[in-house]
Image (tube, rainbow, N blue to C red; front, side):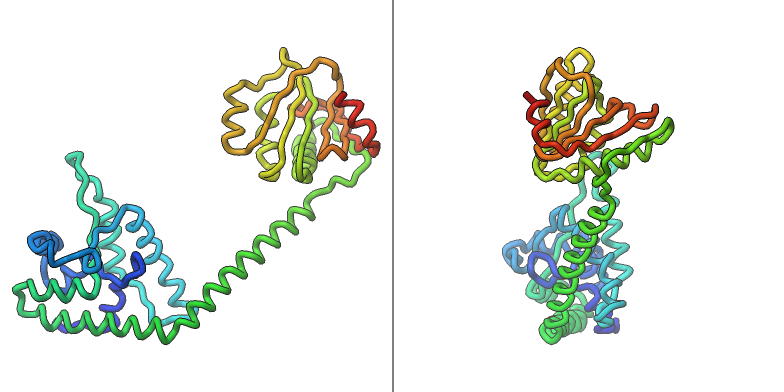
Length: 314
């Protein structure tokens, strides 16, 4: 069997900080079935410590699947030397897809061989091509190490570029969100049917809070939780409502707090109108219950009088 060095290199992956080959690829190169390779290892287990051969976890198999899937993108950008092994991918996908035995058991996860493990294995196999194949595999490992060392600066540049792109994306999202928020109005009127427009403005009001949101509304239901889920992570929420008309259950509140902490509900009967207070400094008077915004004509007024906030809450 004549193997091309590039083809062998395509079968080498990095797992647990080591360059390794999967048992199925090793078996194919040596002309054996995968189970025969693993039987040889098990019969000589003392010759295969972890630095020679180890079994992958399910998480490592999935990570390797992603590594194979993304290698083609890297090839198209800076490193044409790195190619995707289609046969390895199909072999790995098959192992993942058939990891559960149809009889109810679980088949073994694949094994990975380091360079030392393959050298040990070649001495145990009674195969005419074992020596020739082993030499080519060793050369491929050496070439891969040389490639990584010689192109280490490229890997560092790629990592730095990825970090910069992530930072730019984050800053763009922050700027885009700021542009979307239109909360400097004094008064807005929404007519019957303007449900989305009203929802959008309420969302902008909620998203501007940095510390606390206080909602006063006697008719609260779970629809308000969908809007509050868009708040900033550190913002606390207090809902003041009438107990007899509130449609939020303790389970609703608990589940919301499990993902978007923290929400408190306080029952009070002294308010008739609806108010939204942002960070104890911005006050909105809402002419309709928040659950009914846009269903009938109503108005939202921004009140520039911080003294009124304390009077409302007292």
